[in-house]
Image 1 (cartoon, rainbow, N blue to C red):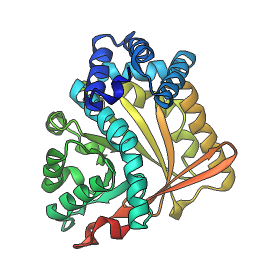
Image 2 (image 1 turned 180 degrees about the vertical axis):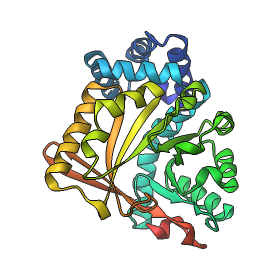
Image 3 (image 1 turned 45 degrees about the horizontal axis):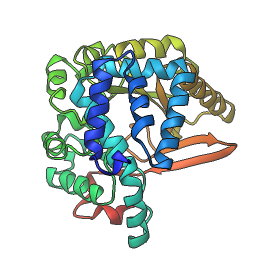
Image 4 (image 1 turned 135 degrees about the vertical axis):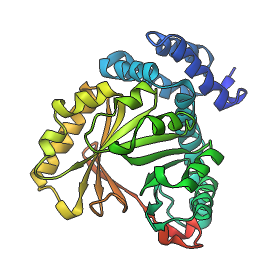
Length: 318
């Protein structure tokens, strides 16, 4: 029997999280064993088998899952997996393809919501409207730029949209104990920390977060060295974005070396890291994801929607 077609996906995710949290050391293996018994869909079964093979073969993947489970509060882990895996990928990809064909537009896998700074900020109404319209297009995972954690309207939008995962740029210096305590009440909001300061207070609060590192010709080797990465992992960072700016572009040989280094990190360290290229220095503009897969160069645009959006509909901005 294919229980995946009977039991709601969010219930399945909650059950997986319960299993992992109850036994972080062996929970993943228990999840795979259950999947072997109950998953009948051939495509899903193949995906599970590939995941199980990678888990058994690569110690860094086992360490990554254990770190994620040990150091992330249950509600945050549940929201992250449900919103990213179920809402954004399993349900979202078919919906985005359907809407793309119907509307004759190119819908990105995700976009950047730049709420702005100071007096030049996006109104709460616009933030809420764009997030809602994104869900209608199948987008449930959003990168947030600007001074989001100081924007009252942004917090309100997070609370009203628990089925969307927000990955928000945040300055390390702003992440004090009070803000960390507030973040615990928003399991669908994950800080993407800018700066190299110690942020172990996030780990102490069991908050899932990532680190955004500006990479330039002067620091590209140091930024991806073990001396920089291992403290981040110990402090609780699970995602690493290494961002280069077109204004301070790496030379071709430097770009090749950093890509090789990032690939090596993913192979041996319990860390999910990616190289992104920014249109400007403050990371508020569009980002480009660059990856070489099977000898082919893959580049995906992550468009940025800024405070000047006005009353425009999200579909008209892609």
